[in-house]
Image (cartoon, rainbow, N blue to C red; front, top):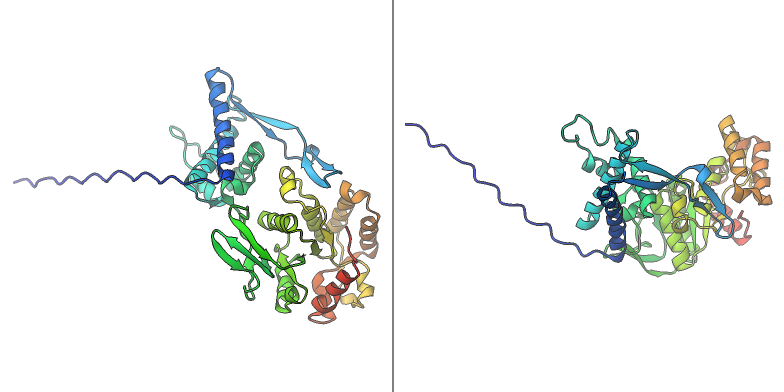
Length: 386
């Protein structure tokens, strides 16, 4: 007798995802994404070639606004068309990234830029073509969508790798959790990638200023010596070139809490560039300088005269290489440095000296020289570059 064939029960239908109450910022971003999609549909209905005009993220389309004192993007755009064979894939990828951001916003979730790459990666039906060959294809498309929608990556619910910490007399609220940054021990509060007001609110602050240092190793010295407690300040670092979350946090602390920002950086072209990015913004993110740049930030870092002024030995000198020299000359030619005699003198002196200095060189004087002597003296004497 034949066995009765068992039938597998049908899986229950998936429960509908609960609707998320969106804050105003998300509703605005969602409206921009929907407007983008509506434009494509309207063009198709009129039998026109759907296209998008993406602001050009190139040096030629960036200018320094002297009145605002930061870099901003010009009006040049690049047209991306669906029915242009050389642009069809990038057009599809642009729409795909926008749809991925729409999904994240509607579900009230975030992911990394790596996570979005995997969320959107698949083989296009009926072909052997992948939507994205690798993340190197998706990352610039994400930046295109940012400028196209005039939205921060974080407003698309995307975050980057966390890199940067802060400590000091400030209490903030992070997604409903109250954080006392004066009680964060040796590690400090890790500055997240997304620091917008609907995520992080400042509850109270007793600090008088912000000291931003270049590296976490220097930050650890300041933290261990409790510099922030003795001088009533917020101490931050960005692990070298500060990521977007750190720059946005500094911007918010400066403008919302009226805190001066001082930058303790290396005396080398890289330190100068980091200061430039914090102060005037960067070329890649020129469209967001108004929310990241801090034109009143001051350079408190090492100077070319510090070898003699601090009595340092020749052993701490690092010889400039050809790349250093080229980079220093490029920075000296930046419009925001061109008209500043003090900066031109500083860069020329470094080039004439033929060497650069790291903040850690001060350890050769004493392990805590930078926190006990160097920085307090520079602050007291208001000896900084602007």
